[in-house]
Image (cartoon, rainbow, N blue to C red; front, side, top):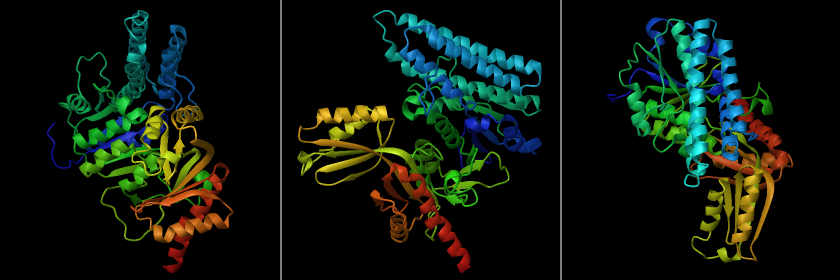
Length: 483
Protein backbone atom coordinates (compact mmCIF):
# COMPACT_ATOMS: atom_id res chain seq x y z
CA UNK A 1 0.00 0.00 0.00
CA UNK A 2 1.06 3.53 -0.66
CA UNK A 3 0.53 5.53 2.49
CA UNK A 4 -0.25 9.19 2.10
CA UNK A 5 -2.34 11.94 3.69
CA UNK A 6 -5.82 11.05 4.89
CA UNK A 7 -7.88 9.27 2.24
CA UNK A 8 -11.62 9.41 1.62
CA UNK A 9 -12.43 6.03 3.16
CA UNK A 10 -13.47 5.11 6.68
CA UNK A 11 -12.52 2.06 8.75
CA UNK A 12 -15.44 0.78 10.81
CA UNK A 13 -15.76 -1.89 13.49
CA UNK A 14 -18.92 -3.77 14.40
CA UNK A 15 -19.05 -5.31 17.88
CA UNK A 16 -20.26 -8.80 18.70
CA UNK A 17 -23.63 -7.83 20.18
CA UNK A 18 -24.40 -5.74 17.11
CA UNK A 19 -23.19 -8.50 14.76
CA UNK A 20 -25.81 -10.84 16.22
CA UNK A 21 -28.51 -8.48 14.94
CA UNK A 22 -27.72 -9.30 11.33
CA UNK A 23 -30.69 -7.67 9.63
CA UNK A 24 -30.29 -4.49 11.67
CA UNK A 25 -26.60 -4.30 10.76
CA UNK A 26 -27.43 -4.61 7.07
CA UNK A 27 -30.28 -2.08 7.25
CA UNK A 28 -28.48 0.50 9.39
CA UNK A 29 -24.77 0.12 8.62
CA UNK A 30 -23.67 -2.08 5.74
CA UNK A 31 -26.25 -1.17 3.10
CA UNK A 32 -29.26 0.85 4.30
CA UNK A 33 -30.23 3.31 1.57
CA UNK A 34 -26.76 3.33 -0.01
CA UNK A 35 -26.41 2.52 -3.69
CA UNK A 36 -23.61 2.34 -6.23
CA UNK A 37 -20.38 4.07 -5.19
CA UNK A 38 -21.77 5.08 -1.77
CA UNK A 39 -21.44 1.45 -0.72
CA UNK A 40 -17.68 1.60 -1.01
CA UNK A 41 -14.73 3.54 0.42
CA UNK A 42 -15.42 1.73 3.69
CA UNK A 43 -13.54 -1.07 5.44
CA UNK A 44 -15.38 -3.17 8.02
CA UNK A 45 -13.63 -5.06 10.83
CA UNK A 46 -16.06 -7.49 12.43
CA UNK A 47 -16.13 -9.22 15.80
CA UNK A 48 -17.48 -12.72 16.37
CA UNK A 49 -21.21 -13.05 16.90
CA UNK A 50 -22.26 -12.29 20.48
CA UNK A 51 -21.21 -15.00 22.97
CA UNK A 52 -19.15 -16.98 20.46
CA UNK A 53 -15.74 -16.01 21.85
CA UNK A 54 -17.00 -16.88 25.35
CA UNK A 55 -17.82 -20.38 24.09
CA UNK A 56 -14.43 -20.70 22.39
CA UNK A 57 -12.32 -19.41 25.30
CA UNK A 58 -14.16 -18.78 28.59
CA UNK A 59 -17.02 -16.53 29.63
CA UNK A 60 -15.62 -13.04 30.05
CA UNK A 61 -17.52 -12.33 33.29
CA UNK A 62 -18.49 -15.64 34.90
CA UNK A 63 -15.32 -17.46 33.72
CA UNK A 64 -17.43 -20.48 32.70
CA UNK A 65 -14.95 -22.63 30.75
CA UNK A 66 -15.09 -22.70 26.98
CA UNK A 67 -13.11 -24.90 24.60
CA UNK A 68 -9.76 -23.34 25.50
CA UNK A 69 -10.26 -23.54 29.27
CA UNK A 70 -11.32 -27.19 29.00
CA UNK A 71 -8.41 -28.02 26.70
CA UNK A 72 -5.81 -26.37 28.94
CA UNK A 73 -7.09 -28.09 32.10
CA UNK A 74 -8.13 -31.52 30.85
CA UNK A 75 -6.09 -34.58 30.03
CA UNK A 76 -9.00 -36.02 28.04
CA UNK A 77 -10.02 -34.82 24.61
CA UNK A 78 -13.69 -35.60 25.26
CA UNK A 79 -14.54 -32.53 27.33
CA UNK A 80 -12.98 -29.96 25.03
CA UNK A 81 -13.90 -31.99 21.93
CA UNK A 82 -17.56 -31.99 22.91
CA UNK A 83 -17.37 -28.25 23.62
CA UNK A 84 -15.87 -27.67 20.16
CA UNK A 85 -18.71 -29.68 18.62
CA UNK A 86 -21.17 -27.51 20.54
CA UNK A 87 -19.52 -24.40 19.06
CA UNK A 88 -19.85 -25.89 15.57
CA UNK A 89 -23.55 -26.51 16.26
CA UNK A 90 -24.00 -22.91 17.42
CA UNK A 91 -22.34 -21.65 14.24
CA UNK A 92 -24.53 -23.81 12.01
CA UNK A 93 -27.61 -22.59 13.89
CA UNK A 94 -26.62 -19.00 13.12
CA UNK A 95 -26.10 -19.94 9.47
CA UNK A 96 -29.52 -21.57 9.38
CA UNK A 97 -31.09 -18.39 10.67
CA UNK A 98 -29.39 -15.81 8.46
CA UNK A 99 -29.08 -17.54 5.06
CA UNK A 100 -32.31 -17.74 3.08
CA UNK A 101 -30.58 -19.32 0.06
CA UNK A 102 -29.71 -22.98 0.59
CA UNK A 103 -26.61 -22.71 -1.63
CA UNK A 104 -25.21 -19.89 0.52
CA UNK A 105 -26.05 -21.78 3.70
CA UNK A 106 -24.29 -24.88 2.41
CA UNK A 107 -21.18 -22.85 1.53
CA UNK A 108 -21.14 -21.19 4.95
CA UNK A 109 -21.58 -24.53 6.74
CA UNK A 110 -18.83 -26.19 4.72
CA UNK A 111 -16.47 -23.28 5.38
CA UNK A 112 -16.89 -23.47 9.15
CA UNK A 113 -16.76 -27.29 9.22
CA UNK A 114 -13.39 -27.16 7.45
CA UNK A 115 -12.08 -24.68 10.03
CA UNK A 116 -13.54 -26.48 13.06
CA UNK A 117 -12.34 -29.94 12.04
CA UNK A 118 -8.95 -28.62 11.00
CA UNK A 119 -8.59 -27.03 14.43
CA UNK A 120 -9.78 -30.23 16.14
CA UNK A 121 -7.17 -32.31 14.31
CA UNK A 122 -4.44 -29.83 15.22
CA UNK A 123 -5.37 -29.81 18.92
CA UNK A 124 -5.64 -33.59 19.05
CA UNK A 125 -2.20 -33.99 17.47
CA UNK A 126 -0.74 -31.46 19.91
CA UNK A 127 -2.29 -33.27 22.87
CA UNK A 128 -0.88 -36.58 21.65
CA UNK A 129 2.56 -35.03 21.07
CA UNK A 130 2.61 -33.56 24.57
CA UNK A 131 1.88 -36.95 26.11
CA UNK A 132 5.61 -37.52 25.63
CA UNK A 133 7.89 -36.04 28.22
CA UNK A 134 9.94 -33.97 25.78
CA UNK A 135 7.03 -31.65 24.93
CA UNK A 136 5.08 -29.53 27.42
CA UNK A 137 1.52 -28.44 26.62
CA UNK A 138 1.92 -25.24 28.66
CA UNK A 139 4.46 -23.97 26.13
CA UNK A 140 1.84 -24.05 23.35
CA UNK A 141 -1.31 -22.88 25.15
CA UNK A 142 -0.94 -19.26 24.03
CA UNK A 143 -0.96 -20.41 20.40
CA UNK A 144 -3.94 -22.66 21.06
CA UNK A 145 -5.84 -19.71 22.51
CA UNK A 146 -5.10 -17.64 19.43
CA UNK A 147 -6.19 -20.40 17.04
CA UNK A 148 -9.49 -20.96 18.85
CA UNK A 149 -10.24 -17.26 19.12
CA UNK A 150 -9.81 -16.81 15.35
CA UNK A 151 -12.71 -19.18 14.63
CA UNK A 152 -15.29 -16.68 15.86
CA UNK A 153 -14.13 -13.84 13.64
CA UNK A 154 -13.63 -15.88 10.46
CA UNK A 155 -17.17 -17.24 10.86
CA UNK A 156 -18.81 -13.80 11.11
CA UNK A 157 -16.60 -12.16 8.45
CA UNK A 158 -17.10 -14.94 5.88
CA UNK A 159 -20.87 -14.91 6.45
CA UNK A 160 -21.08 -11.13 6.14
CA UNK A 161 -19.15 -11.06 2.86
CA UNK A 162 -21.32 -13.88 1.48
CA UNK A 163 -24.54 -12.11 2.44
CA UNK A 164 -23.32 -8.86 0.86
CA UNK A 165 -22.40 -10.63 -2.37
CA UNK A 166 -25.91 -12.12 -2.51
CA UNK A 167 -27.27 -8.54 -2.28
CA UNK A 168 -25.14 -7.40 -5.20
CA UNK A 169 -22.35 -5.73 -3.21
CA UNK A 170 -18.76 -6.43 -4.30
CA UNK A 171 -17.62 -7.53 -0.85
CA UNK A 172 -14.23 -9.16 -0.20
CA UNK A 173 -13.57 -11.56 2.69
CA UNK A 174 -10.22 -10.49 4.16
CA UNK A 175 -8.89 -13.29 6.38
CA UNK A 176 -6.12 -12.13 8.72
CA UNK A 177 -6.21 -15.35 10.79
CA UNK A 178 -3.17 -16.89 9.05
CA UNK A 179 -5.03 -20.15 8.43
CA UNK A 180 -2.60 -22.72 6.97
CA UNK A 181 -0.19 -19.88 6.25
CA UNK A 182 3.57 -20.22 6.53
CA UNK A 183 4.39 -16.51 6.90
CA UNK A 184 5.96 -15.36 10.16
CA UNK A 185 5.07 -11.68 10.17
CA UNK A 186 4.04 -8.82 12.42
CA UNK A 187 0.63 -7.13 12.42
CA UNK A 188 1.59 -4.44 9.90
CA UNK A 189 2.92 -7.00 7.43
CA UNK A 190 -0.13 -9.24 7.90
CA UNK A 191 -2.46 -6.34 7.07
CA UNK A 192 -0.38 -5.08 4.14
CA UNK A 193 -0.29 -8.54 2.53
CA UNK A 194 -4.03 -9.06 2.96
CA UNK A 195 -4.95 -5.66 1.51
CA UNK A 196 -2.58 -5.84 -1.44
CA UNK A 197 -4.60 -5.29 -4.62
CA UNK A 198 -7.87 -4.29 -2.96
CA UNK A 199 -9.49 -1.18 -4.44
CA UNK A 200 -11.51 0.60 -1.75
CA UNK A 201 -13.48 2.55 -4.35
CA UNK A 202 -14.95 -0.59 -5.94
CA UNK A 203 -14.61 -3.29 -3.28
CA UNK A 204 -15.94 -3.57 0.27
CA UNK A 205 -13.44 -5.40 2.52
CA UNK A 206 -14.95 -7.44 5.39
CA UNK A 207 -12.03 -8.12 7.70
CA UNK A 208 -11.59 -10.58 10.58
CA UNK A 209 -11.11 -8.84 13.92
CA UNK A 210 -8.46 -11.39 14.81
CA UNK A 211 -5.08 -11.25 13.07
CA UNK A 212 -2.34 -13.87 13.42
CA UNK A 213 1.10 -12.42 14.20
CA UNK A 214 4.48 -13.79 15.15
CA UNK A 215 4.25 -12.45 18.69
CA UNK A 216 0.58 -13.28 19.20
CA UNK A 217 -2.11 -10.61 19.31
CA UNK A 218 -3.90 -11.92 22.40
CA UNK A 219 -0.66 -12.19 24.32
CA UNK A 220 -0.29 -8.41 24.21
CA UNK A 221 -3.86 -7.14 23.99
CA UNK A 222 -6.07 -9.81 25.52
CA UNK A 223 -9.61 -9.91 24.20
CA UNK A 224 -9.33 -6.33 22.98
CA UNK A 225 -7.43 -7.58 19.94
CA UNK A 226 -10.14 -6.75 17.40
CA UNK A 227 -9.96 -3.05 18.27
CA UNK A 228 -6.19 -3.13 17.87
CA UNK A 229 -6.61 -4.70 14.42
CA UNK A 230 -9.21 -2.06 13.58
CA UNK A 231 -6.96 0.77 14.73
CA UNK A 232 -3.91 -0.51 12.87
CA UNK A 233 -5.85 -0.85 9.62
CA UNK A 234 -7.12 2.73 10.01
CA UNK A 235 -3.58 3.97 10.64
CA UNK A 236 -1.92 2.01 7.82
CA UNK A 237 -4.54 3.01 5.24
CA UNK A 238 -4.68 6.62 6.51
CA UNK A 239 -8.45 6.58 6.96
CA UNK A 240 -10.30 9.88 7.25
CA UNK A 241 -12.27 8.54 10.23
CA UNK A 242 -12.49 5.45 12.41
CA UNK A 243 -15.96 4.37 13.53
CA UNK A 244 -17.04 1.84 16.16
CA UNK A 245 -20.65 0.70 16.00
CA UNK A 246 -21.97 -0.25 19.44
CA UNK A 247 -25.39 -1.21 20.73
CA UNK A 248 -25.51 1.91 22.91
CA UNK A 249 -24.46 5.55 22.87
CA UNK A 250 -21.49 6.85 24.82
CA UNK A 251 -23.59 8.60 27.45
CA UNK A 252 -23.19 10.58 30.64
CA UNK A 253 -24.11 7.55 32.78
CA UNK A 254 -25.76 4.15 32.71
CA UNK A 255 -29.42 4.87 31.89
CA UNK A 256 -30.47 1.92 34.06
CA UNK A 257 -29.00 3.72 37.08
CA UNK A 258 -29.96 7.35 36.53
CA UNK A 259 -32.92 7.06 34.17
CA UNK A 260 -33.04 6.98 30.37
CA UNK A 261 -34.63 10.44 30.30
CA UNK A 262 -31.75 11.96 32.28
CA UNK A 263 -28.66 10.65 30.48
CA UNK A 264 -27.03 12.77 27.79
CA UNK A 265 -25.12 11.59 24.73
CA UNK A 266 -21.53 12.86 24.79
CA UNK A 267 -21.40 14.71 21.50
CA UNK A 268 -17.67 15.37 21.41
CA UNK A 269 -14.71 14.62 23.64
CA UNK A 270 -11.03 13.69 23.46
CA UNK A 271 -8.75 10.67 23.80
CA UNK A 272 -7.92 11.50 27.44
CA UNK A 273 -11.53 10.68 28.32
CA UNK A 274 -11.32 7.43 26.34
CA UNK A 275 -8.23 6.47 28.36
CA UNK A 276 -10.01 7.07 31.67
CA UNK A 277 -12.92 4.90 30.56
CA UNK A 278 -10.46 2.14 29.65
CA UNK A 279 -8.94 2.32 33.12
CA UNK A 280 -12.37 1.57 34.56
CA UNK A 281 -12.93 -1.35 32.23
CA UNK A 282 -15.62 0.52 30.26
CA UNK A 283 -13.77 0.85 27.03
CA UNK A 284 -14.90 3.16 24.29
CA UNK A 285 -11.81 1.67 22.63
CA UNK A 286 -8.83 -0.39 23.80
CA UNK A 287 -6.10 2.02 25.05
CA UNK A 288 -3.46 0.56 22.71
CA UNK A 289 -5.85 1.01 19.80
CA UNK A 290 -6.58 4.59 20.80
CA UNK A 291 -2.85 5.33 20.88
CA UNK A 292 -2.43 4.54 17.16
CA UNK A 293 -5.38 6.67 16.10
CA UNK A 294 -4.25 9.50 18.33
CA UNK A 295 -0.75 9.51 16.87
CA UNK A 296 -2.09 9.55 13.30
CA UNK A 297 -4.59 12.31 14.05
CA UNK A 298 -7.52 10.10 13.02
CA UNK A 299 -10.79 10.98 14.80
CA UNK A 300 -12.83 8.17 16.32
CA UNK A 301 -16.63 8.11 16.22
CA UNK A 302 -18.71 5.96 18.58
CA UNK A 303 -21.99 5.32 16.76
CA UNK A 304 -25.18 3.57 17.86
CA UNK A 305 -26.06 0.60 15.65
CA UNK A 306 -29.76 1.16 16.24
CA UNK A 307 -29.77 4.91 15.52
CA UNK A 308 -27.96 5.25 12.17
CA UNK A 309 -28.96 8.90 11.68
CA UNK A 310 -27.51 10.00 15.04
CA UNK A 311 -23.98 11.47 14.78
CA UNK A 312 -22.92 9.67 17.98
CA UNK A 313 -19.77 10.77 19.82
CA UNK A 314 -16.68 12.13 18.09
CA UNK A 315 -13.37 11.58 19.91
CA UNK A 316 -10.39 13.59 18.69
CA UNK A 317 -7.05 14.55 20.17
CA UNK A 318 -7.33 18.30 19.60
CA UNK A 319 -10.67 18.76 21.36
CA UNK A 320 -10.08 21.05 24.35
CA UNK A 321 -13.32 22.75 25.46
CA UNK A 322 -13.05 26.16 27.10
CA UNK A 323 -16.06 25.60 29.32
CA UNK A 324 -15.56 23.04 32.10
CA UNK A 325 -18.11 20.26 32.34
CA UNK A 326 -18.55 16.78 33.79
CA UNK A 327 -19.19 14.46 30.86
CA UNK A 328 -19.47 10.97 32.31
CA UNK A 329 -20.23 9.48 35.75
CA UNK A 330 -19.24 5.84 35.84
CA UNK A 331 -17.14 3.39 37.82
CA UNK A 332 -16.60 -0.12 39.13
CA UNK A 333 -19.36 -1.50 41.33
CA UNK A 334 -17.21 -4.20 42.92
CA UNK A 335 -13.53 -3.60 43.61
CA UNK A 336 -11.19 -4.43 46.49
CA UNK A 337 -9.11 -2.31 48.81
CA UNK A 338 -5.71 -3.84 49.62
CA UNK A 339 -4.06 -1.83 52.39
CA UNK A 340 -0.41 -2.64 53.11
CA UNK A 341 1.17 -1.26 56.28
CA UNK A 342 4.94 -1.70 56.42
CA UNK A 343 7.10 0.35 58.80
CA UNK A 344 10.19 -0.47 56.74
CA UNK A 345 8.82 1.57 53.84
CA UNK A 346 9.62 4.82 55.63
CA UNK A 347 12.47 6.57 53.85
CA UNK A 348 13.26 3.54 51.68
CA UNK A 349 13.65 4.24 47.98
CA UNK A 350 11.77 1.77 45.77
CA UNK A 351 10.14 0.02 48.74
CA UNK A 352 6.96 -0.63 46.77
CA UNK A 353 8.63 -2.51 43.92
CA UNK A 354 8.24 -6.01 45.47
CA UNK A 355 4.57 -5.28 46.10
CA UNK A 356 4.02 -4.21 42.49
CA UNK A 357 5.78 -7.34 41.25
CA UNK A 358 3.30 -9.53 43.14
CA UNK A 359 0.37 -7.59 41.69
CA UNK A 360 1.84 -8.17 38.22
CA UNK A 361 2.42 -11.87 38.87
CA UNK A 362 -1.21 -12.46 39.83
CA UNK A 363 -2.57 -10.08 37.16
CA UNK A 364 -4.34 -7.92 39.71
CA UNK A 365 -4.96 -4.52 38.13
CA UNK A 366 -4.69 -1.35 40.20
CA UNK A 367 -7.32 1.24 39.29
CA UNK A 368 -6.10 3.88 41.74
CA UNK A 369 -4.04 4.01 44.92
CA UNK A 370 -3.08 6.12 47.92
CA UNK A 371 0.33 6.34 49.55
CA UNK A 372 1.82 7.79 52.73
CA UNK A 373 5.01 7.25 54.72
CA UNK A 374 4.34 3.69 55.87
CA UNK A 375 1.16 2.58 54.10
CA UNK A 376 0.21 2.00 50.47
CA UNK A 377 -3.37 1.17 49.55
CA UNK A 378 -4.26 -0.28 46.17
CA UNK A 379 -7.81 -0.24 44.90
CA UNK A 380 -7.91 -3.15 42.50
CA UNK A 381 -10.26 -4.76 39.99
CA UNK A 382 -9.88 -8.53 39.71
CA UNK A 383 -11.77 -11.74 40.58
CA UNK A 384 -11.81 -12.52 44.30
CA UNK A 385 -9.78 -15.70 43.77
CA UNK A 386 -6.91 -13.72 42.24
CA UNK A 387 -7.06 -11.08 44.96
CA UNK A 388 -6.86 -13.76 47.69
CA UNK A 389 -3.83 -15.37 46.06
CA UNK A 390 -2.19 -11.98 45.71
CA UNK A 391 -2.82 -11.11 49.38
CA UNK A 392 -1.44 -14.49 50.51
CA UNK A 393 1.77 -13.85 48.52
CA UNK A 394 2.06 -10.34 49.99
CA UNK A 395 1.73 -11.64 53.54
CA UNK A 396 4.41 -14.24 52.85
CA UNK A 397 6.80 -11.69 51.34
CA UNK A 398 6.39 -8.82 53.82
CA UNK A 399 8.13 -8.55 57.25
CA UNK A 400 6.33 -10.14 60.22
CA UNK A 401 5.27 -6.81 61.69
CA UNK A 402 3.68 -5.68 58.38
CA UNK A 403 -0.06 -6.11 57.87
CA UNK A 404 -2.33 -6.51 54.86
CA UNK A 405 -6.02 -5.62 55.16
CA UNK A 406 -8.69 -6.01 52.50
CA UNK A 407 -12.32 -5.03 52.07
CA UNK A 408 -14.87 -4.75 49.27
CA UNK A 409 -15.31 -1.26 47.88
CA UNK A 410 -16.67 0.51 44.83
CA UNK A 411 -15.01 3.19 42.69
CA UNK A 412 -16.95 6.05 41.14
CA UNK A 413 -15.27 8.36 38.65
CA UNK A 414 -16.29 11.74 37.24
CA UNK A 415 -14.71 12.25 33.80
CA UNK A 416 -14.48 15.15 31.37
CA UNK A 417 -12.21 16.64 28.72
CA UNK A 418 -12.10 19.84 30.80
CA UNK A 419 -13.41 18.79 34.17
CA UNK A 420 -12.92 21.99 36.10
CA UNK A 421 -11.84 20.12 39.23
CA UNK A 422 -11.55 23.33 41.29
CA UNK A 423 -15.28 23.83 40.87
CA UNK A 424 -16.62 20.31 40.60
CA UNK A 425 -14.53 18.53 43.23
CA UNK A 426 -15.97 20.48 46.21
CA UNK A 427 -19.46 20.08 44.72
CA UNK A 428 -19.00 16.33 44.40
CA UNK A 429 -17.67 15.92 47.94
CA UNK A 430 -20.49 18.02 49.35
CA UNK A 431 -23.16 16.12 47.40
CA UNK A 432 -21.91 12.77 48.70
CA UNK A 433 -21.68 14.14 52.24
CA UNK A 434 -25.22 15.56 52.09
CA UNK A 435 -26.49 12.11 51.13
CA UNK A 436 -24.64 10.37 54.00
CA UNK A 437 -22.26 8.55 51.66
CA UNK A 438 -18.90 7.90 53.30
CA UNK A 439 -15.83 8.62 51.18
CA UNK A 440 -12.99 6.17 51.90
CA UNK A 441 -10.56 7.85 49.50
CA UNK A 442 -10.77 10.47 46.77
CA UNK A 443 -8.48 12.32 44.40
CA UNK A 444 -8.53 14.84 41.55
CA UNK A 445 -5.57 14.65 39.18
CA UNK A 446 -3.71 17.67 37.86
CA UNK A 447 -4.47 16.80 34.21
CA UNK A 448 -8.03 17.86 35.01
CA UNK A 449 -9.76 14.93 33.30
CA UNK A 450 -11.07 12.80 36.16
CA UNK A 451 -11.97 12.65 39.84
CA UNK A 452 -12.18 9.34 41.69
CA UNK A 453 -14.12 8.41 44.81
CA UNK A 454 -13.66 5.12 46.65
CA UNK A 455 -16.81 4.22 48.58
CA UNK A 456 -18.44 1.31 50.32
CA UNK A 457 -19.72 -1.25 47.85
CA UNK A 458 -23.35 -0.73 48.90
CA UNK A 459 -23.18 2.98 47.99
CA UNK A 460 -22.20 2.57 44.34
CA UNK A 461 -25.57 3.00 42.62
CA UNK A 462 -26.67 5.85 44.87
CA UNK A 463 -23.36 7.65 44.37
CA UNK A 464 -23.59 7.50 40.57
CA UNK A 465 -27.14 8.85 40.78
CA UNK A 466 -26.21 11.65 43.21
CA UNK A 467 -23.14 12.77 41.26
CA UNK A 468 -24.96 12.65 37.93
CA UNK A 469 -27.84 14.66 39.36
CA UNK A 470 -25.48 17.25 40.85
CA UNK A 471 -22.75 17.58 38.22
CA UNK A 472 -24.54 16.75 34.96
CA UNK A 473 -28.27 17.31 35.31
CA UNK A 474 -27.88 20.24 37.71
CA UNK A 475 -25.30 22.00 35.56
CA UNK A 476 -27.43 21.51 32.43
CA UNK A 477 -30.47 23.00 34.14
CA UNK A 478 -28.43 26.02 35.27
CA UNK A 479 -27.08 26.55 31.75
CA UNK A 480 -30.59 26.39 30.27
CA UNK A 481 -31.88 28.82 32.90
CA UNK A 482 -29.03 31.23 32.20
CA UNK A 483 -29.65 31.06 28.44
